[in-house]
Every structure is written in C-alpha cells, then in structure tokens.
Amino acid sequence: MAITQEQLDALNIAAQGKFQQAIEKYDMGFLGQLALSVTSTHASETYTGLNQLPDLDKFIDEVKYTQILGKSHMIENEEFAGGVTIQSKDVEDDNLGLFPSRISDLGTVAANKPLRQVIKMLENGNNSSMGIAYDGSNFFATDHKDGKASYSNLLTGSGTTASQFEADFTKAVAALKRLPNDAGNPFYGDLSVSAANLLVVVPTELEIVAQKVLTTTFGANGADNVLKNRAQIASPALLTDPNDWYLVFTGSSMKPIIHQNRKAPEIVLPTLNDESYKKHLKLEYMANTRFGTGWAFPQLALKIVNG
Image (cartoon, rainbow, N blue to C red; front, side, top):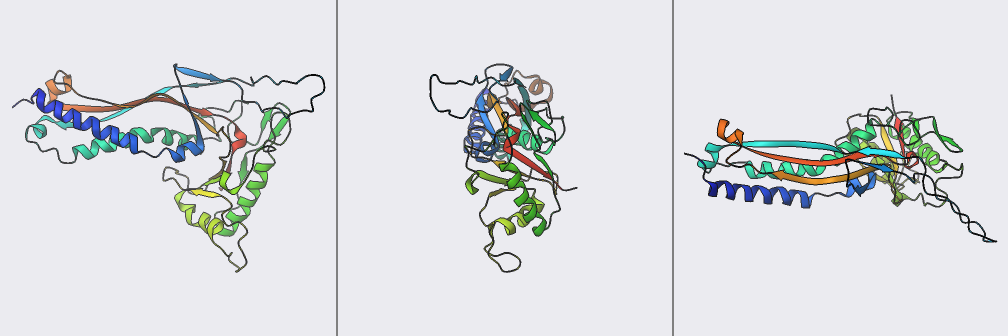
C-alpha cells in the first residue's frame, strides 16, 4: 500500500515542528563566549578593522583619527548537510517508533554544528589546517608580529596535576595581561581582566583539576585559595586532547573567533516524487546549514600545551 499525500503531510508537519523546536531551545551561550556571530550575505566576507582603537589624546588644535582598516581577512562560507531516512512501510503501519525523537536530534546536531567547528578551530589553532590569523601566523603561535608588536599566545604547560595547573594558570593570566596591541601598547589597557571575563576551557580529563584550583575555598596545604572564583570553567566533551587547555578573555565585544551565519539550519522535507521514495520506498529528511568560521584577535585567547 502506498503512502498517501495526507499521511506524508502529517508526517512532514510533525517533523518540521520537532526540528524547529530543537533549534529554538538550543543554548547558544557557550558559542557566544568563544565566537562573535555576524550575519553573512555573500559566499564569503572580508573583514577589516582588526587593528586596535587609539587612545584619546589631549585636545589642542585638532582631533587625531586612526583609520579603522587594519589587515583584511576573508572568511568563506561552507555548506553542511546530513539526514535520516524512514521506510514507507513504517509510515503505512503507523510504526514511527523513535522517528520524532531522531528528527529532534537532527535539529540539535544542526544547531550545534557551529560550536563543533569552533572547538575544532581551538584544537587546531597552533597549525594552519583551520586557517591562519590576520597577521599571517597560526592563531596560537610564539611568533606573532603585528605592527610594532611581537608576542606569543602559545604557552608550554608544566603538567596536569592540580599544583601544575595552578602554576600554569597563574602564568597564563600574567601572560594574557602583558599581550600588546599593534601599536606596542598593552592590549588590555582599557579592558578589565576580571574573573567574570576569564574563561578556562578544559577537556573532561582536567575538569576536576580545574575545579580544585578555581572553586575550592582552601588549597592543598589548608591555606586560603587565592585563585578561588578567579575564572569561569567550561569543559566541552568535544575537546579531544586530554592535556591541553585554553584561557579565553570574554569581556570584549570581539571574540577570538568569528562565526558568520549565511543560512540558519533548515530541514528539507521529502515528497512522493523523490527518487528515494519511488525507487527505494524511503523518505529522506535532510538538515543543512551554511556558515563560516575564522580567526579574529589572537590576543583574546591563550593555548597551554602539555606534551
């Protein structure tokens, strides 16, 4: 028995609803801490203005202006797609089983794809596989050169024990505060490097270690823990390296990474005229989205490498 148009319409309405609900309830908070989201209207976007804003000088005869240009940096949009199928006999027998849940999961996967790309960029930021920074170096590098400034945002850690993490965190915060802008002045001269603006991103293997260092009231020796609440902690399961971690400054309108959204996730619904149905008696539901990711200011993040 063939699927009727009425049956397919009902199934597609349910699928569209489940997919959209998953998109709407997805929490974009963590992505927003790591990446600046912008709207894209072309196949690629070119960004200028990645130079530091000037200080305010004493007014005497005329105002001094700094042109917001900087080096240009192009980010191309990419298309991502995936889908699920359902056999026509299951629709005929009203044996949908987990199908509604799988469509909901497909929406979650589509909504989460930008974060997957951003985490992938973090992990590969010390090589060129995910692109290079606007100054021509890898995003995490020891040899950044920008205008009058030379600096490193790639640190070698001392290990993964609590005492080693404590020492490396202290060193990393100091290094972050000392990073220069393209004029050679302190990048953080006008920014507050407070606990609310610092995010430690660790793999699951280091989550408990980070919590011991940054959330407990007393240290291992019983003394007051001066690092308590010194930074926020995030431990995404997407991080694959068990030893490396990141220190990210979140208190700026700019972020380490740019996420440009060309097309929001959408679901493509099947019809009775599709080849997959006419030849294989399968209904295909596809999710797709288009976006691009690229690097912004290297001074906004440090990578700490442990072996």
